[in-house]
Length: 159
Image (cartoon, rainbow, N blue to C red; front, top):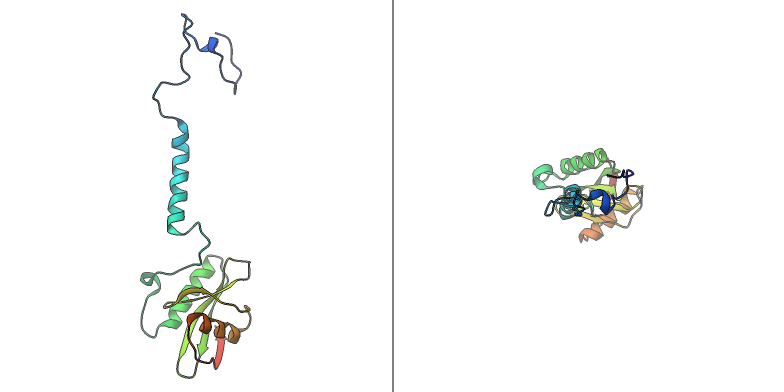
C-alpha cells in the first residue's frame, strides 16, 4: 500500500483491498464526530439564550434570593448591590426621601463600563434611568419618574 502524508486524504488506490474494491473511509451508518463535538456547545448556547444569560438584559433578582418583605427595601437593596459588585458591576444603594415616605433602591451601571445607569427595586425590578452616576437627587428623581411615582424628592443620598 502506498504511504499517505499526514493530513491528506488517502487516494482510492491506497484504500483498496487486494481485489482493488474501494472501501469507504468510515463504516456506513457510523455517527460523525461533528455532532458529538458541537452538540454540547449548541445545547449550552441554547440554555444560556433561554435563561437570558447570553442576552444584554439587566440583572434581576428572584424573590426567593433577595426576599419580598414589607418595609424591607433597604436590606433588599443592599443585598442586590453586594451581589452586583461581586459580579463586577458598579452598584450602590440609593436612599430616597419624599414627603410621605422613604425608599431604597439599588443603582447600578449596566453594561459595565458603558455608563448606562439603571435602578433596581424589589417591586419595580430593573429599569433604565436618565441620570448621572454621581448626583443622588437627580438619580432619585429619574427613578421616581421611570417608576411612575409623582411625589417630589426632598432628599436623596448614596450608601
